[in-house]
Length: 408
Ligand code: SF4
Image: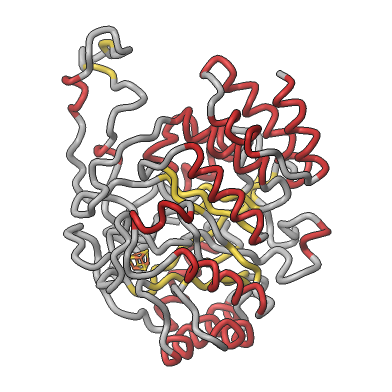
């Protein structure tokens, strides 16, 4: 396909595709899907080999946010049955981080719900960063605390933070539809503050909120313009108790096309599969490793991921390798500036994960005849790829903020 040859050539040269080319990737058919993955995989391997960077989320403060991000289980008025707790102490956060690092992660992402940190919060997180760095040599730490005020990025940098995450989430033109308590411009401003302070900027998106292909291309081009070192791609987990609980728009194929498009537009950037990996990519997760070079290990902020061991086995089975602390993540031309490898974590949006109602399940009864459903070996109807998978969503009940061991 000429389109794919062109995109590979551009990706290897770090040249920006046209909007039309990016849109065409999203419009490819299922017949062409493996060709799309193979082409974007060439670009991924050129810049990142077969390495997969593992990141580990520590939710420092969960729920009770005054903001109204409609995708988020921690939002104002959320009815999601998530864990709610205030700031973890530095030693508690460090203990949670250690579990992820022992599981193979090289970056810890410290996330707190809220509009943005007070100066006292920055002190608190600075103490936490120092505690983690003292106890774990070579660890990268990314903070994700919301909108930053003047001087806060510099203070986090001085405390030892390597990166700061703040996602754009969606296109500028639709931003007001998902959040009213802050603006797209506020988010851009915080990413720029992180950059200016010498922190590695991490900024990404959430797909699956009812956006158009044009919106997706808009936000990815806006990210390219902002030039973060890493781009987390979240796939919306429609959580019960949030306004987007019924927004099940994604299929595994759609997720792969989105990741391929992001790779073509941001070829030399750490593309991370973030929230929603297990829920939306499902058995196609290994194919997604050909596109993204980074994932989260274990659980998300408010939902549970698949077992950390399953992540590691998937990486090995797919022919990839976990990136060690002795390797710099980013290509040399990027690693020199900012923090090099220490870019963003992933949370990006402090969104949650998991809806907590594991109901769902049986939706298949509603499948129209001939739509692709069929009887499984146990006589139960097999779900179509586009059916809601509420059965795969589980609220986090272990790790930070609980007495139970974390998943790592
Ligand atoms: S994404 Fe962040 S700012 Fe928005 S509601 Fe969730 S925790 Fe609050």
